[in-house]
Length: 185
Image (cartoon, rainbow, N blue to C red; front, side, top):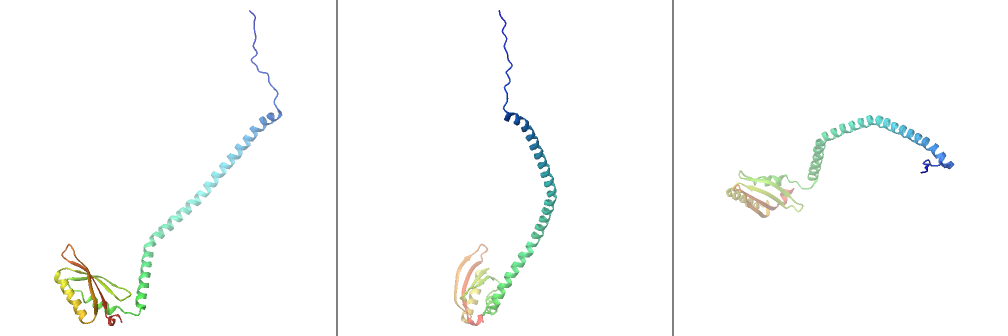
């Protein structure tokens, strides 16, 4: 039997000059890129740390200002409410009509069992009064006072609406009427 030999070593081919240059330049390019990345990364960390303290101080100032604003919200609400009430009072006082005598006549309608809870006067001088009466006798007394005011020509066109008996055996009603012009001066 004859011996056979097998050559497993591959014959080296000559490389192109571009491949030789790439083998030389790619590791250098990689090292330079890594160096640039490390420099940029470290500089960004330094920049963030430097600005983080400034950010924290600004955040603290913002929190303090928000606390001061929230502490003054109640005072601002009271101020706005007061200004709106003063404007309303000025508008009412600057009008030609004086409602003091009308309101005093409306308050005369109240008695021990009758409570006037709300009074509205519209632009046509029609008055609406919300009344709560504790009993039928109190309601009858209120109706008598209204009739006397009608007879005295203080009120006219008296209309009652929405009479409801509540759970406490009282009465809720709404009365509308036109006051005389003498009450509006």
